[in-house]
Image 1 (tube, helix red, strand yellow):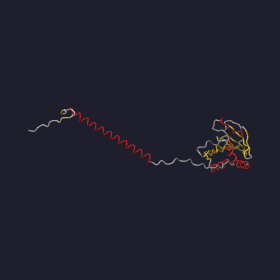
Image 2 (cartoon, one colour):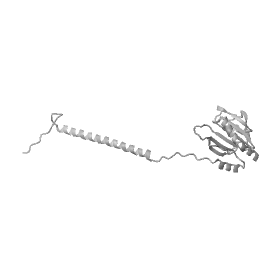
Image 3 (cartoon, helix red, strand yellow):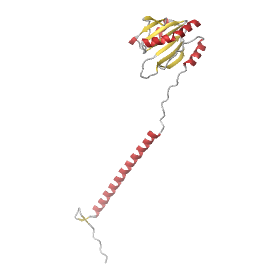
Image 4 (cartoon, one colour):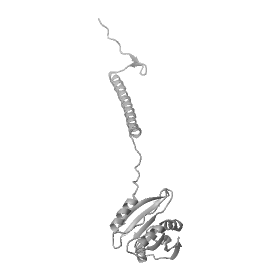
Length: 215
């Protein structure tokens, strides 16, 4: 006759487990196992995500920011001269300056505009060189918020109208110099100092003289 094996005594209970206790213990063990597996899967997924992000950040070529294309003032000026049948100013600039704009603006008064600013980002301000065709000093207040000259100054033998606007203007223009160049009026205006503007005026003197002599 076979003997039925006695159920083992559980130390914590001091007696054999009941069927319900055995089922509960196995269920708890299974739940703990599934929980540990889920946690491991979560950690593995996080590691995989971090690895993918690292590949994107460090492996994908990032390149260099594109630099603005240099403006060919000489070529544009030649086209303007051909259009206007008149010589135009072309400033001879050193490395301190960069050209931001060079264009012919239409309207009641046609204007050849060149805007320059310091090449060094630490330097502030700008100067616009405006040659207004068939215009005189009465044109200047139209672009200077109505301001008239406050005085006059002689630079390299040429007399210039001085517009010392300071902080009274509304278009970021604090100072301007203007002079007649034959039938045209030349205006240098912007937010650079009086000294910086005067230096530019002096550098343009020979070209202004050439415009006068060409008419």
